[in-house]
Image 1: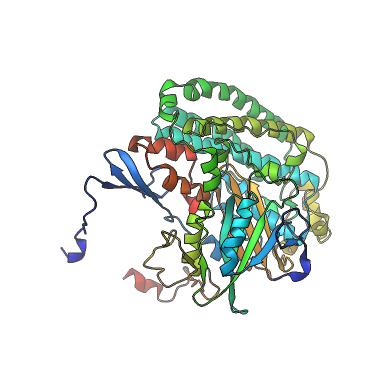
Image 2: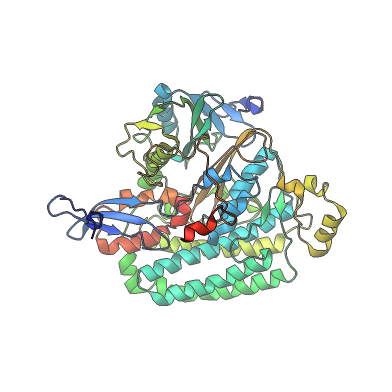
Length: 398
Length: 165
């Protein structure tokens, strides 16, 4: 044996034990939490993230503007529409264009399908962390309904790459409305069964109630986002604050909870599922007729491209869209994804590639919770807190 | 970069800045010594949270710009939703005071800007690498423009057979 294979040891304070949790999949991806525990009470917690870091901001500088969409999708493939919509919107702000109304509605439909799928994924992981394997199966099984619906719409289950600056790539397929309504009807029935099985289950309740409390003031101070901040009593939702897509025309509420514990965060997500169903129902009924791409680009289409658009109702990839050169300038855009707010800041120097793209994902902003909220809790409460935050490592690491 | 697209600050926020036309963000330019003062003023006005803290590298102009985006949850009507603080820094040894005592939410973002751009945040209690390997990226600053990503042609690599021994 060489000298290197020897494990190095060091002394730490008496009575304090250092516990490494991860990086081999403690939850839904690779991350590590370094805990310092006194008995079974957490004294200090240090989230060690970056195990799935890809430096997307650097990679984005080497690709054409629209070709970054498949890259940014890889942050959270289960929420692919929401996490790339912000980027597309930022480009649209630089170009000074708005998508036509029908495209806005299609964007909203896909965004909400993704939100439901993302919540169900997060809660499935949460259920298995709590040892409730039945709900894990149920959440993942029911998620399939919305993944399939997204596939009908876009052609892909997860990585849709569905948006163009100025529109979307496909029109609604025939019969989509009926299928969507069938799916919604099924899911409404299931939501009632979730209550009996999971939300009102005394074992689950006792593991979640009062655990991982984040006060209203602390939530604002830490800058956490999404359902987590709304469960602490702050009505922060980008869909309301800076409305985009078809949200200003639709009628929905943003539920909030005041308790701020793990249970409130769970109930918050279930309430949001209900609101998403409401949005989907309205959007599919109110969708206006019209083009799905901005007229500026439709004008550039050749006869072949126009024929494909009319007969197959899809936008064939036009070179004009690949060689976009947004004018010099900067723009930011933000979007409310399943886990919270996605923030994009793009800088253009007039070339066909971005000069700089800054992206802040909701999980990155939520990861601060582990450092500031875990101390003072028992180690046994860690899965409940970790799961209720709905932390997704590939999204945080970017 | 794009001075011609900027307009006057017509919002109710009493702070010197210019409203950007593309996205209606209020751009406030400041200097490292005045950064903390600007931050405190914004916090008093209700800007409670930092959304993003990062930088943009301009090697041609010999500068780097620190860019902080701040927002608040209960802003009075007429206030801009997003305020963008810009601080020009030298590319050699850029230093700014840390904002962590004003906004706790910058904690991890300052660490990220430190490892990606080499900006030192004076007063940050725990300034070390967060996403990258601290040993491999000790002196490398990946998001600076002079860091070039080496591209490997996997399929047609020369002497490809040699690697297999």
